[in-house]
Amino acid sequence: MVRTKTGIQGLDKALMGGIPEGNIVLLSGGAGTGKSTLAMQFLMNGASLFGERGLYISTEQDRDELMKAANNFGWKLDDLESKNLVKIAYFDITEGNDFLNRVDTLVQNFKPKRIVIDSMTTLTDSLMISGIGKKDAFSMVQIQETVSPIPRTEKVVAKSILYNLIKKLKHYKVTTLLTSELPEEHKALSADGISEFITDGVIVLHYLGIGSANFRNLQIRKMRYSSHEKDIISYSIASKGIEIQAEESLEI
Image (tube, rainbow, N blue to C red):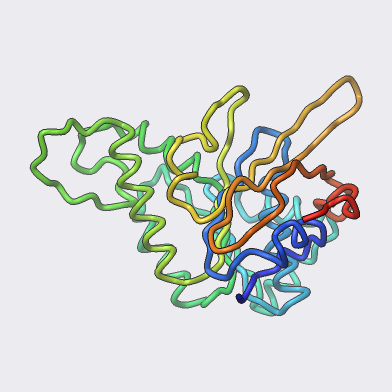
């Protein structure tokens, strides 16, 4: 099986060598867990270590903000951009500018081997703001009107949108990370409660702060087409990004 390495040694070991190529993986976690950091590191490592093009689509942070975050970890984002190995795209989805077509244009022109969309939470939140039942609600994805006795609830529409997005991403056959905010005490594995069922993999990140001490751990909840570490894995956000703790204790 061809795998896409994250470049994070302990995580790749837990993934039996990396993410199966073409898988779409959800990164879920609360504030401070490092979802965006892990996602950006995935692209940075892909470009700098393996020469693979990476496309980062942000719906929250613009290029300047992402550049500051990258510089904080010593990642040469500007250099990788100049070498055409990484592309940053910021979409202000409140403008309703046909999200899927814009993504398609970027992918077709840049031809990445890795894609990050940060974040799915912003996409689904925009749906709720747009209003359910409007013909043009959430214009980034076109939903065909059909005659159905089933009411178009928020969850039904959100599910249709997410299925359209995942279907489009699968068509590219590119290893993709999607981030999702996970509120405290939330029983689902994503903010929308749907993404975890339609993606190929789910990695959940947790954060616990006790006094001045911070404890972070992650768990690979599922990964299609591959076995993986089932136990909880400790990690930290260090000067160069995500680092897996006690790697030697990972026994598969």
